[in-house]
Length: 114
Image (cartoon, rainbow, N blue to C red; front, side, top):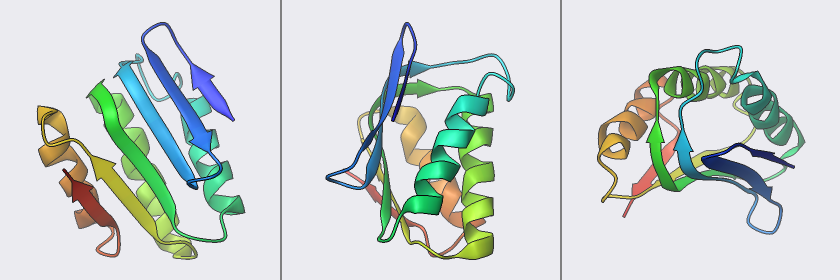
């Protein structure tokens, strides 16, 4: 399962049970992020163990993208069926604040920014 654009790539790594993001993700609005939203929900619904969202190689995510991820976290919190772990890169400035804010939406989300 993957989504590719000119400047970004999002794919599900089954072996790691991780959705891995890379590149620069700056779609215009929530409608353009619909495929990503559906992918996140589908993987979550089929996960049996902790799900990892790996943003380490994502250089940029605009506000519409952050909103999409935030809505996913809120929906996951409602069922609280699968633990979510978020991986970030300390050298990518947007990740330090934005990814940590996701933990405010659901305190059980694990954040690891290296």
